[in-house]
Amino acid sequence: MAKELPGYGTINVPKDREVPFGAVTPAPVCTQNLFQTSNWRIVRPVKDDEKCTRCLICYLSCPDACWIYQEKEDVMEWVAGFCKGCQICINECPTGALTAAPELDFPDGVIRLEKPF
Amino acid sequence: MAKEQMMTGCRAAAEGAKAAEVEVICSYPIRPYTAIMMELAKMVANGELNAEFVHGEGEHAQLSVTLGASASGARAFTGSSGVGVTYAMEVYSPMAGGRYPAQMSIADRTLDPPGDFGSEHTDAMSTRDQGWLLGWACSPQEVYDNTLINYRVGEDHRVMLPQMVCQDGYFISHIPDKVTLGDRSQVKEFLPPYRPIGPLSLTHPVSHGPQIRPDQGAPMDAMRAQTFLAVPKVIEEATADFNRIFGRNYDPFLEQYKLGDAEIAFCIMGAHANTCRTSVDRLRKKGVKAGMARLRWVRPWPTHQLANALGHVKAVGVVETSTSYGGAMRGGNLIHEVRASLYDLDKRPLVTSFMAGLGGETIWPADFDYMAKVLAEMVKEKKTKNYVYWIGM
Image (cartoon, rainbow over all chains, first blue to last red; front, side, top):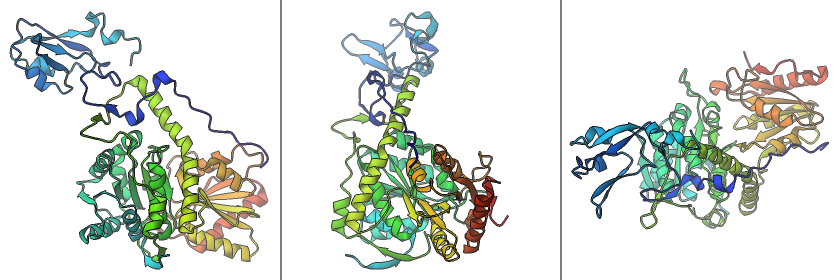
């Protein structure tokens, strides 16, 4: 062979950017941080605890399991990392305890993330 | 040692799956690959093979069932032909990205239109960039062998990728040829049981196929590309082991036929390589120094091996059995990669391509004579006049 052919280069994925093998993650967990999926949310549901009857319809209707009933405090807890702002819970809430608020109104709004999409 | 039997490529693929003791099979009919599933259904019904046989409601479902089966830790098998291969298109990338080493056995068929039943590599070639291992056999024997080799390579923990084992429809899938099946001890020595990584489990629950963030996309792609850098070594090891255990003589990536002193060479894959081989012999009798390089793998593409095998040749004719309409050479797919592989050589061969065997047409010995004539003219004139020649058109 007259000369050496080019190689394929090397690929070094930085440790802090590595993705789990085949994107397989432990489950079930409520708020695992490996694959948060809320960064395209435009609005978020805001609850009024006075109006909320803890009927759990939001818990049942959420496609991403983003409402959890905290038994000890007797409140509904919203999971920010996975709520995509689809507003199904807002539509389904029988007492009008949930309203849609723009992400821009919040200091932790996803629109302010350092790594935007 | 088992003795030779006559069988079709479809039967050979089924025998390969049976030897690999596949645990889940998912079928949906489309000819010509259907005969693979017919053979496997018989084996399951007769109690020769202990596998779950699932009928999918389409090829997309077939691949999805196979993905699920592989995720649960089963050795899974499926297959298709022609438009069936393209109907399942969405599932290819998730299957490779999720690292499910299932196998899909393909008996090639044209795409629509016009719904031609003939063999053509376009179906499987259209999936070549989805992250699967992809390769072609040129005989029923090689179909059987590749079925086992692919499971071994795909399930290796350095790889963990799905595999597409292709054979030309009809030419291989339906024409019987001599096949020597391995015996149980040989298969056992060659192919260890499938050891899944992070399978679905009741005691250790995991989540497969979650949504990932855009900033995780690039590392995910890079890690998939990184895996492909490791594949060639695994293929070499597996082929060497296979040759030793089963007494075969495969080159891991390229069959090199009379290339040593060749001045012109055909680069080809699949069934038509058989006619090509005899054409090389005939041409040599006439004093033409011809040779042949037959690709056994398309993914990973054997860049360096091809450059080393063809570097000294004066003109290379790539025999295409698939289409790439509007592509760089306005012909098929292979020439792009062959030319790219040869580009960095100090002395490059002239390279052209021949569109042949499309729609299931036979490539006749006379066609190879014509191709050899074109290549000889290129050598004489020291230039490539056309990127592509359409045989018979």
